[in-house]
Length: 379
Image (cartoon, rainbow, N blue to C red):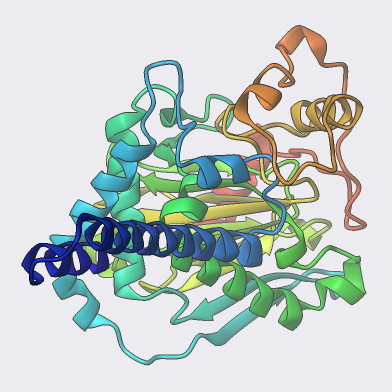
């Protein structure tokens, strides 16, 4: 806008020497560059503040390019798609209320350790729309590399998953800022720093950010988010619109394998220790969720697998330490791509010891049977 005004001023001014005109035109161009640079710096500052462990993707934001999954560059496409969707749904902003996030409930295990915190008013309607818009744009431009019709072959069920890690930090930083704030609220309430010596959320890396839709699936089998510290799960749907679909959780060392069930209200969040066994009961109707997993590593790089494994990231970090210039302000995509390991490069990896227990999926058919029996007894 400033560029347009200054250019019009030069054109509409009284007759002047060519030198004066060129000086004013040059000033207008400089002003344009300053405005654009400030906007870029602001976006970079936001990423640095709310995603400080961004060294493996910061170059994407600085260079406004690099979102290529082998089928072409899509940074500009994603930017336009998100902005277009935003302009088409400005009315959603009016729905937001001044409701403050509030602790609703907590769950402790048999050792008196808090394993779950439920938070109300955790996400606003406009932020929900931002998540859905970003998911739609991601699926449009990265249908093969960032979308998965994900079946849980061992325990049954599944979900349609759109992977948005890095994209959420770049194109919806206000949403990611909220994710961090909600995670910190739960972290402080649960005492996970003092009790389990886990890193605070703002010092952790984001392993994955996923938009989950259960339209094509009727349940989600029991599993653990192996390799992550804690998971932040936002409820995007009104629970009145679907039947069943309760989130269930089995704390470690729980007597008689007692299960706990939650049907989160719309706009609320459940924050829990990732290694805890959990799943979703049988359901009918639309159920949409937004989940984020934090881990001890930096944010997973763009070219990694959609949900990077600890073994992959461990190998990658070791090679990066040996290869990269760590005095550099940021890396370039070509510096990172070749460092990501192939499957044959990775040796056995035992997992990360959080202090709560090794990350491992202890689910089995017996656990599923116990869960069903407990559920039937409750009903």
